[in-house]
Image (cartoon, rainbow, N blue to C red; front, side, top):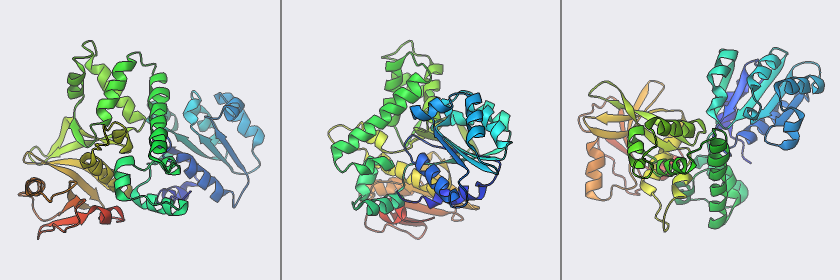
Amino acid sequence: MIIREKYLKNIRGFYDSDLVKVITGVRRSGKSVILETIMKEISEKTDNIIYLNFEKTSDFSLASTVEELVNYVKNNRKEGKCYCFFDEIQEINNWQVAVKDLRLDNCSIFVTGSNSKLLSSEFLTLLSGRFVSFRIRPFVYKEIKEYSKELGINIDVANYLIWGGFPGRFNNTSLEGTKAYLSDLESTIVVNDLIKRYKIKKEIAFKKVVNYILCSNSRIFSVRSIHKYMKNDFPDLALSTVARFVEWLKEAYIIDEIPQYSTKTKRELQYYGKIYNSDVSFNSLRANNNRYDLDHNLENVVYNELLYMGYELKVFTNNGKEIDFLASKDSKIFYIQVAYSVADEKAYEREMSAFANLDNLNQKILITNDIIDYSTSVVKHIKLEDFLMMEEL
């Protein structure tokens, strides 16, 4: 497995800190491998290390309660600073109480979890600023190229646009194996992490909402619009229930939402946001007859890549026309439009017209899968393959 230096360099400065290191992200995005890499680096200077994976029955049986966890560390640690690694710690009720006690007993603590409830209000109150969090995402294209080289396989851009970057899927060389792995992953997240965790009674309605949302990546949405879509099949489904469904998908890191920002109102628009899947495979699994949604998947990929580069993102509305991203970092702002192709004249006019009447103080960028350069005097065209290998804009 590759060393994910982009994430590790942000975590290393906290190895010896008494701040609790919280590593989150969607299932199978690589959190456990990050944890193993950190343990390997720390083991070069000490063997005072304790590791428990609470999804393993054998480990959970060793410490299934707060009291058992504190006692297990106490009985198995050595003198001096102890480094504790707890994988999928949300399986223990009130785990934050144990972490609070252990960090006061000369322990450097690292925890992982696949649900943002890990950073619940109870946790925030109990530790009140005594933690630092890091979100791990599936591979971006640069990481895929590195990993595929290690495996001796070739993964091209088209494959990435369809099947995304979950690390485990690259161990499957066949299309059938890839689909099976990703389908199993989604089922684990939806059934085990959400339906069982939240005891969802309206299971059929929930699954239909999930299908609708995961097919709607890179689109403006509102909870009300989803509720309207569901109304014919589920007339008794409340708007508040749909809102909870959406929040649970966010909590499991399956989807992200970014707000709209309008030049006209000079403020973020409430109630409407834009959905992006944590990985485009969630959309592709729902494709019929291999008709993959490359247009929206490409924009979703650009979203994930920009986050990896460290940009803060919003949707930008310019006099009624949507610009896909307002990307900002280090006091620099970029207006970014994304399209699969602008070879067609109408597509070119549609994408370019979104930049109309914007000043030239901030760079305007068009990203497409075209091989021809469509740059103008005011808009920089970046070919997708070039963009995917960039460290920053």
